[in-house]
Length: 351
Image 1 (cartoon, rainbow, N blue to C red):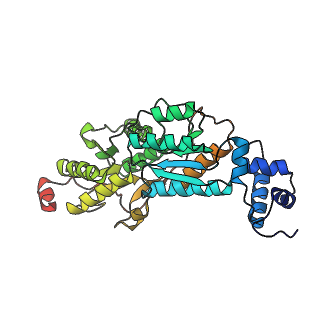
Image 2: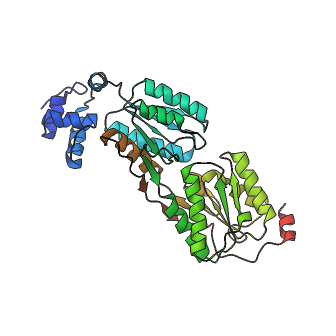
Image 3: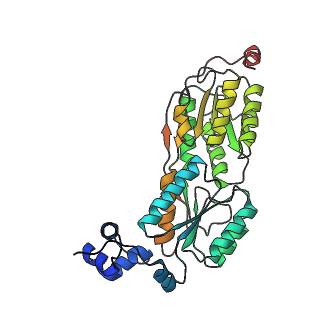
């Protein structure tokens, strides 16, 4: 078959893939049942022919404009960037475009963005929602008929919205077991002062794992910070200056991990000789630290891809329980067996 590139029709794709026109339509609309093997064959044929579905035609049939919305806290955040990449890859493979916006953790701004996206009658919205919000905007969006999927964070009381999350509980459990296995008993936890489900899961996993291993949780070593660099730094500095007996720090996110590394350096603490540091999230700078940082790697790209796939292909959306994707403990040089506790004089020298 000879077809001018860019002018291929749905009939051309169907012929090249050896399927019916209805099957090609189901693949690109995300409606109806199509096997994974058939879907890949159709998409391969479409790529070869440079076929582009008519967004206008699909919009008229489905009474929507096409495209999907994506709301994240910060497009420059390394984890969010990975999640965005996953959503983009999936959206492109299914013939949709992306409308991206950032709420910067502000529930009011997030609500405005959601209203605007719903008004555009998109195919649906994926969001890493603001942890401190009431969720009223999301409830209104769902009541209006909008399709919504949460990615990386679910909000309490919004069980009707499906979510794709990292298995944070398992990741933190594995990291705590590793630190205790090295001999640490005075382990500090730097957490996020948020109401988000993910933040609560990580702290509960920390506490529960210590209890199961017979290690008492010292409440003075469990510190919270707002999701901002200044707050994270203040929390880490206060902890490491106040408690010279800490032998390991578990940071619940990469901003907190960054703060712990900076404070340890300013206090002239050797890592891991004086204090071991590990964190949740693997970001590019973690491997460039001296020594490289032990982390719980969370699948940002896969979370974004799966959330987009769920949004566009699951009919209807199922919200029985979140989809949990596995994490991985990446052991590097920042953790080792505990040494003798730091003394007040060594702390003063560190200043």
